[in-house]
Image 1 (cartoon, one colour):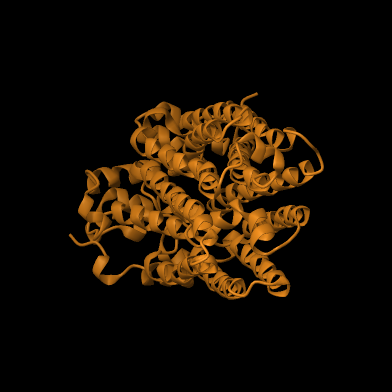
Image 2 (cartoon, rainbow, N blue to C red):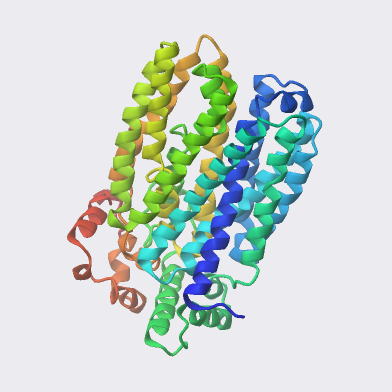
Length: 505
């Protein structure tokens, strides 16, 4: 049976969500087994530096996967790269689960990371580009991050359950289980086409027409389908006219007609900040933080880690439910304020170790996670997938995610080493506090609002005056007149564009 309409889009979202469960599982599964005797025995009782290498190799390899997508992303399409990513992850998982040395485990984690880079670069793009409903788009991309949180939580719960087992299965079974998530992701994605925007951008008009008609479950001649096609083609035409090539200088000060470089820069910095606030340091080492730094018993630390990641999943779902109630900027600024408060108190408590302060620090960590869940967890992904121009969307989003992996690598590799150094110790958390503090101002001054616009209408926010008189711009403006928007959205979008960086002729 050929899927179409809502059934086709649900299948695309389900495939993407399962792909991000895979990402979450990979990100969380080692965190719960790093301190188990069977794991330590299998990999030769690694010191802190080697343990950091084991966990962070996945992150650096994910960055490499993103860079590959920026270079070759248009060659195979969104769908085929995602499938390739899952296959590479399966290979890496087999290598990891059969490891009897930390070298082999690191090699396996590199394969997993490269595949993960393919998937995390293109799954949100795929889901966003398959959306024909603007309100559903943000929630659907948000659901990807929620699914990643669910994958982390599931991994920690399985890790906790395996603490009651014995032998090598304690860590090998959770690691090997990732293969199932990859296989199910492939099974859901195979019946789907690629996105209509990808087909049109690569001059595959017949395939684009067929996919667009399937998504609307209407003939191509239908008014809604024809208008959507016209908008996509108009956006492509604008980009051809306005943006010949990305110029290096535009990444610093962009005066081009559609500000492609500025839009990429905005997404890269936003996602990078989102992972310099302590995200991966917390989730990769939850059990270690609870056990070694806060002083909880091993089984209690494992259970607390599972509960904490469950809190993350629940709050992520709240974000999915209410994503469109507030603007992207509102979610991010409010989240930055809340996270800063919890991180500041947590850092202060970590400076005075003890049973009572440890318990209080754990509660602050839970508070930070609850605020992060619906705000800085998913919204940078949603925003970065929306703000990029179509021609460079695979490059812009892949570079944004690559900033995530570089930030995550830096924090997960250097963080534990710094904390273990008695001359640094708790002061490491000040680094993360600083980025929590600067997150809000960055969004306020640099990120225009994108809520309520189609992906093509986002071009209008950044378009120079010269382009507004073109037929392509007028095609987009017919569905994006300011009178149909809420005044808050318009004012926020305009206010967030610095006057001296608005494009000039």
